[in-house]
Image 1 (tube, one colour):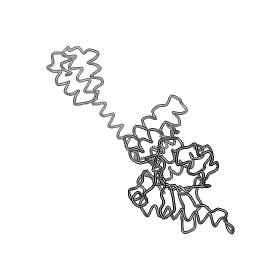
Image 2 (cartoon, one colour):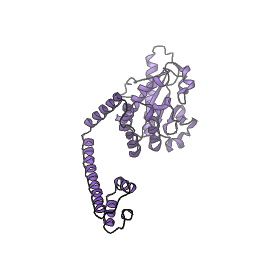
Image 3 (cartoon, helix red, strand yellow):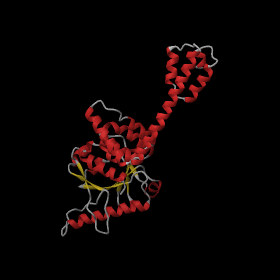
Image 4 (tube, helix red, strand yellow):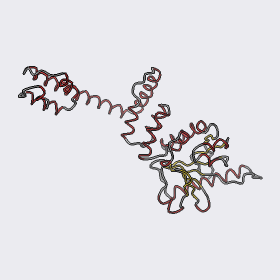
Length: 307
């Protein structure tokens, strides 16, 4: 199992009980002995009466003791074989529950299955005509065995749905990242940025939010997290060092160009106004500074040199 999948499962495990007010908890499922048949997790229902007030799909769990969850994140297969394997795991868990109650099984229900993915694949819509009953929530009935398909890209941005929303992809994932960044601890947000396939632009935008904090304790925690991440990734350290060297060289050349321009203007007794001096200081394009330098040799005034 990859790191994105582990992050998604950890989010369900850490968030479910808190977000549902204790109505539902996450449980690692037992291994089902075929060779190894194990779903991603189980939602164990403790207080079904609390679920009515939450956003779908939570209310759909009210009539169940547990719900099997299968997570398909961005890049995971959602073809026919992947779904059939999920249905096999659901059936195996159902058999396991029946056998656990032998010799006189009292449970006569069917194991609910919630499959969480970014979107509904085209083949599934054509084969089974899923019925949409809420934003992002679909009832699917292959061969009479109903399960729910939860399209994370279509779900609303709600706190109680965070565990489902980590399965988003593309622009929907970027939107989720911007929304959730201010609602979760920095450690969780950094894990999200590390494991989920967001765009580079969004990832950099969110990282810039972690500028220097006013609270010394918060700043110390941030520095510690960054140090740990850098120690775990020597390649990133090397790139940062290279960028720092390149930045230092670039800033040095800009400073030299500004100084040369000011020397020529001073020797020609072309007085700089405060506005023109501020323009020179603010300019970060070496080619522009060099052009102004050449123009200052023959210009009649500082303003003319900086055209």
